[in-house]
Length: 114
Length: 114
Image (cartoon, rainbow over all chains, first blue to last red; front, side, top):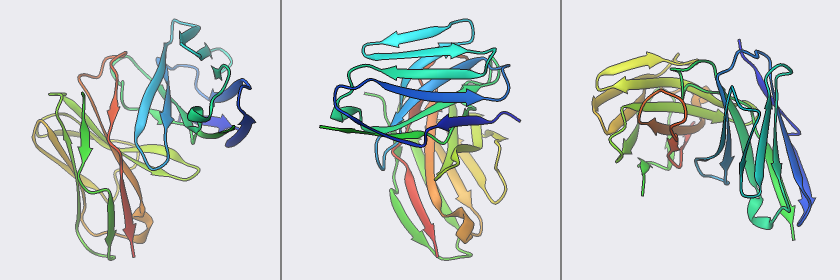
């Protein structure tokens, strides 16, 4: 059974520092990997999707990489801002027609201090 | 603007009560999902529905059932609530199960069973 792990569980950085969030998965036979953001007491917002054939994806200050062979993905957030404070979750999808039926990590809670 | 609405944000129920959690989406999506989120465990899939009156079990369906009589509405039912079902419940929807479509989450329903 696929297991998804996110380390660290919590992270606090001063404003302006770059953030590095890690996600690892035990079964490399994934189809896609998605990064989400969750604000306190709210639902999830999609951030970046990496297809299995891709090695990275970028949107603004966010960059996500994927290394299927080692079972790892990393989310980089450049020049962090207090508004980046949230919980970040990664989720993997096992096959082409199972999008939405994710296996989630427990998330990394990020605090960016002014 | 896309919308997944969970009408009950906070509920307190007694052990043994029947509980209904309602989710409505306004995007004409075929697929809807119920997840539960617990600290340290991330999100886990309870049930999903790929069409009206069609459903499939997720990873943790025990103690739950679902109903989808209309395309826009997906209900999660706890036939006899127990304290271990105290959790945050998140509904999500997708146009189809093929990769790359954005998945939309509701804001969550916090359920406490006493």
